[in-house]
Image (cartoon, rainbow, N blue to C red; front, side, top):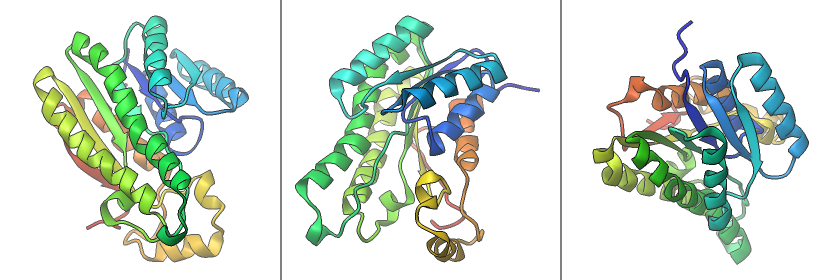
Length: 250
């Protein structure tokens, strides 16, 4: 079987659950060494390290790191390079929600979401650029959301952070394209993860009825596009916003 990322290394933020975990699994299946970050559960991270390494024979290491911190992001990249030599792929996936109507939203709810969802993308991309310039190649994949394109009531902070990722990524693609460093955005729609299961069956049913493909997406659906954008199959694609949403955005 052809392994699209054989011998490459990826740094993935927020990879112990949901979409991040789906991407880590898909990349490991395709021969990619994985450096990933997690917020709190070192037990889950260790379990994931062992699972992926044993199943796919790749090198896997988790790092407890806050992507919203500039200092920690720089330190993380240094540690990853010390451990893996270098890395060609960066997936900025870490993110949170602090939903509230604007009238009730606190400054703290706004700041937390902007820092973790948007500033983190700046932090990690800036920290990684020197490594990509040295390699004369790189694929940066930033996880936005359909909410960053269409907005959503009760999520003005989340929508602003995810829309910001799109503008940031297009600018980075223009700056770094001449150095063979690509930067693209994925906007997932309603993806069924641990987070969405908490919404309850009725809410999920309401969502899926509005989707042309009549189902929620899976982390694997997003991972498949990530695999394409990380691989050489997409070597002439940069600055693009690609949606995995079952037709929610048209």
